[in-house]
Image 1 (cartoon, one colour):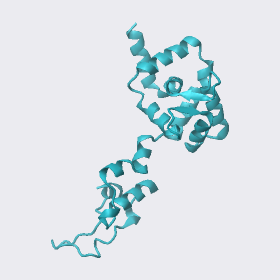
Image 2 (cartoon, one colour):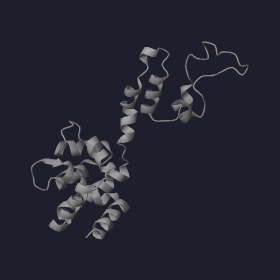
Image 3 (cartoon, helix red, strand yellow):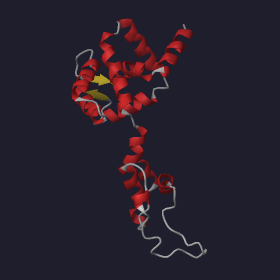
Image 4 (spheres, helix red, strand yellow):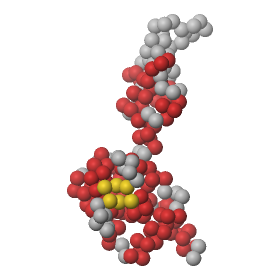
Amino acid sequence: IIFELFSGRPPFRTPSNGKAPTADALSSPNWTVFKASSQALLFCIKLLSVKQSQRPTASESLNDVWFQMAMTSITTEETLALCRSVQQWPHRTPSQRALCLLLAIGCTSLKPIAAIFSRFDADHSGSLDMKEIVVALMSCGIDEETAEETARALDVNKDGVCEYLEFSAAALSSQGEAFQALLRQQFKSL
């Protein structure tokens, strides 16, 4: 099915006469018609392996790089919006930062920010050091100077580490309408 979604045709040719396909017809799909990322191509190649023992299980498939990238995908534009938002974090007043922290604590709609944090947390420690932030931002197409400035902005208390709550609070305003909706909801609850 994945092959068909990315190519618009089945992976194997079947005879129009209703007979079983020949071994030649089942030997290999036409990969030149496959229009997707290299990660999607490699995943599909594994799925369509002739040898069953080489095909991934359902669980292994869900852990494939292609799936993992899709779950934490972020565009350069989204990353730039995140950087702009975070760079303003140290300049926010204590009451503005407190409100963002309050919103971040109780918010259940922060999946995009959580996905970004998880992608950036290379060592899976639950916190980001400044190097992790810079490397992750640069891998998303951000220049080194902007990445370093963003990392410094996240380190308000100068301990060299950014916890998830700090990250999500600083990144909230990058969420546009979702952030505005959170603010409206918070003020309605007062």
